[in-house]
Amino acid sequence: MRLFAAVLPPAQAADELASVLDRRVRGLPGADGLRWTGREGWHFTLAFMGEVDDRLLPELTERLGRAAHRTDAFSLRLHGGGRFGGRALWAGAAGGIAELRRLSERAYAAASRTGVPMEEHRAYHPHLTVARSRTETDLRPYVTALDGFDGTPWAVGELALVQSRLPVDGVPGEQPRYETLARFPTAGPATRPAAEPVADGR
Image (tube, rainbow, N blue to C red; front, side):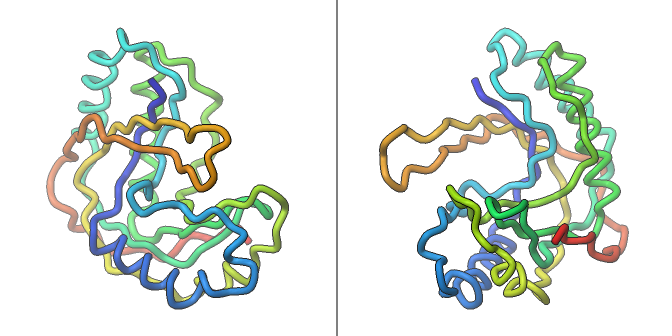
């Protein structure tokens, strides 16, 4: 099964992002040529594992549970946006970015120690993908439209293990499907104040 660890935004945060996309972004010229992700798939990936042998799942869940429990809950909010070249548009994050990176490192380590073949762990850049393009597209106007967007903070109190199923080839508009297999609580309440936003990568 194809798995990744993630932080999932709560309904209120998703509502705020959907609203700003509808009001500022989706009506821009060329927006109908992008593939917009469904809100049911919105997430901040912590560690992408790819195909994982079912036999590793019990140990993987145990280790992810310990990784989450070692991490204090923290504050996070959706903030601004950015792009990866001309292929992906994303919403950014602000608040407990250091804690989010630490949780990413622990999720990666949990998967690696379980025996999941992991790619080299790169510097973590939190992002929530909202649209993709099949061809190189000037996404700068879309990023500009997200300037000033600052969502309501929420307490990140869990790590999620998610299974993804790739879209069916040749089916127009088909999107990946996601299923949350397990949720692992963090330790304690979120008490730290929000920090300055991270750079948006433009």
